[in-house]
Length: 274
Image (tube, rainbow, N blue to C red; front, top):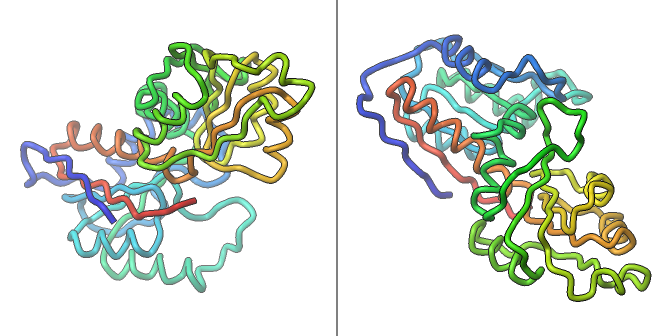
């Protein structure tokens, strides 16, 4: 577990959970998204917020860290109450919510809006650290795209692997486009210049990336079928880790909140190899 602190000029101020949520809702344009979970305030701790902890997922380890930090709120990318999951507060989810309530900690979560934000979003921040320049949407009809197309200095797959490894602190799993016989003639020795990017579990967008003329697709997860798709579509695939690709957005949002309200915000990275 590692912590990154954003120090505000003053730590004596406070804000209500509702006011904090309203600011974030407006900043992230949450009303523009149809999501798989509620965005915004998911658990109201019932007290003014003076200290905030941010993290990727509202797991029990993050909650324990927030308690130790005397935080009044947790802001995350992966919250609770996902579509299709049991609504009952029992078992693991019950323990998490109980700890939040017993310690007066509010939990605020933002999913797709935090992927898509053009400045503070997960895709934008990942592109920044990989030296990619976002030029458009992976799905052109989307006005708030959750996947993007980017360009980069022409480079080999090995060079992009080195960049990813340095930026994220872990090597990606790379599926080469050169394996499949039908694509080898077109991709052997090809430099990567046009890259599809979508953080998290977006491996099934690989076909769209190929359709849009991308040389490579960067995401977090990989499925068994992804390997065959990359080989047969002639597109390099880089699985960089769901967690690793989605640290940037919530860190950036925490920094925005700290600057806006003068509150101390701490990003706590709960190590996750997936």
